[in-house]
Amino acid sequence: MRDAARTQFPHFLEIPTRWMDNDAYQHMNNVVYYSFFDTAVNRFLIDRGVLDIHSDEVVGMVVDTGCSYFNSISFPDTVHAGVRVAKIGNSSVRYELALYRNGDEQPAAAGHFVHVYVDRKSNRSVPIPENVRAVLETITSPL
Image (tube, rainbow, N blue to C red):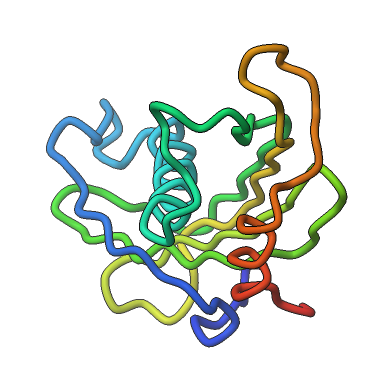
């Protein structure tokens, strides 16, 4: 996804970097990239009304994630996190994400993020709720 154009992502979240995101090498530490993935996906679900982190009985749990790094990001850059759904299964969804630095056309990093939907009490997988599936389909990409 090194050459992933912004137009390949149907949803974006703008995230400002913070002073504390820089590490000793003067760029954003790798753990922050994963935090941006998590924030972009969950903010999308919250904003669409299909995730209530406090009371939903069914929630998505991260089971797999990965990231490739192409260029550095550092404070005070603004990150534009592109999100798309690559695959929806019975109980899981695979997101693909790209992080663009400021107005750059090529991603500084790209990766994936997989949720498996589980019953919060039993922690056992369950089918993706229909209202969630409908929202996920709005950003599904055939790429």
